[in-house]
Image 1 (cartoon, rainbow, N blue to C red):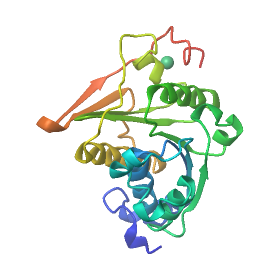
Image 2: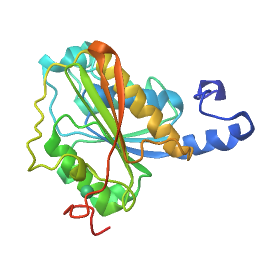
Image 3: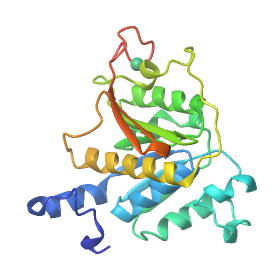
Image 4: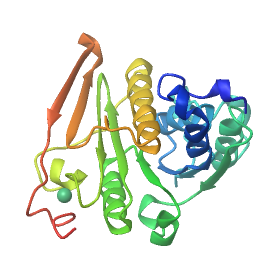
Length: 240
Ligand SMILES: [Zn+2]
């Protein structure tokens, strides 16, 4: 891939070759292959990420096609994981793409160890909390994002350093998440911000969303950054 294809705004001219090598050698594990995962994985491939692993268990549902960019009508007769690989490689043939047809809860901890970073693009919070535990057990950073209707949010979770997803949204709290039809503009905005966070992590930029939750409300084009703190009694991360 031509170096001109890489993100110009993030790569500094005097570090260009080193930064490009970091991006090419990065190993990213993405859980979920709905609309968010589709946009994030394609953006990461376009940016030049060398190794992308997608984990998703679901058989494709026709009703979700209109917002699932990974699976065009031409791929209806292909298995979802095959069409996902083909689609990502259409943006960058040099990206090494692996698709694991599994539940998030079935991600082997040894598999997680092989990656630099976990990207949470799961559709449901049950899977997101499972992924959070995997991130903590494997001590692998996780970029969490979620989108519903007209809003979305994201944060970067660094085990032993920052609040984890459980600190933020305990499964036992009143917080609940109901998947709804997601409008494309909201999901595309959050996907690009999540991709940017991945690239900043790889390039070790100090502007990550550490202990910060970025929220976006698309109807009023409103962004907010909320400070978050680690729960000292969190059953998932307090022992780290
Ligand atoms: Zn926690």
